[in-house]
Length: 177
Image (cartoon, rainbow, N blue to C red; front, side, top):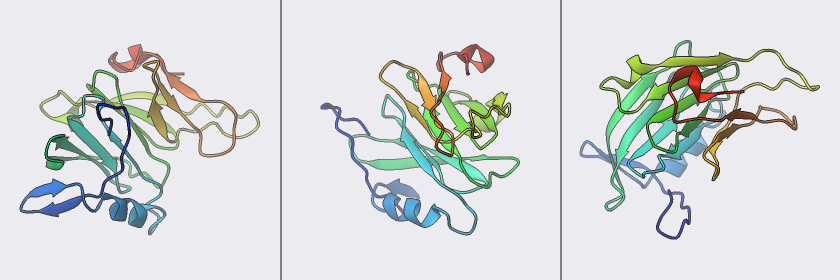
């Protein structure tokens, strides 16, 4: 989470009294990585600091409201992934904090975090086309960069990245390549 000095911290996430607080996140992430076929996990704060998203299982991504003053996570909203993802899901949130991008090995989806029902706002952006220079350039972890674009790695050692050029644009207008 960025603070006023652009320093990033990793906190722990804890649930009690119908609220989540940042106390056990590290435990959650470590126990999800490669556990029972659940695959890797990615977590991300929105650029405005009001949302936190966590891909924590093969079936869902949870989006929370985040209070930067208290560190509390509240109003968990599960986005059910179908079909379930075996491994390699990635997350990023657009610069305006409106769109959540969720990738699995072969597909990229966009969700509107401003929608009344986030799950129903899903748009399929693209499917992996089989490109191999020489390894598969599948879809994997994502990161919002200082230039306002989202960059995505493959799940192997290729030297190319996927790019979402206009992540604040809806649907295919986001210009994914």
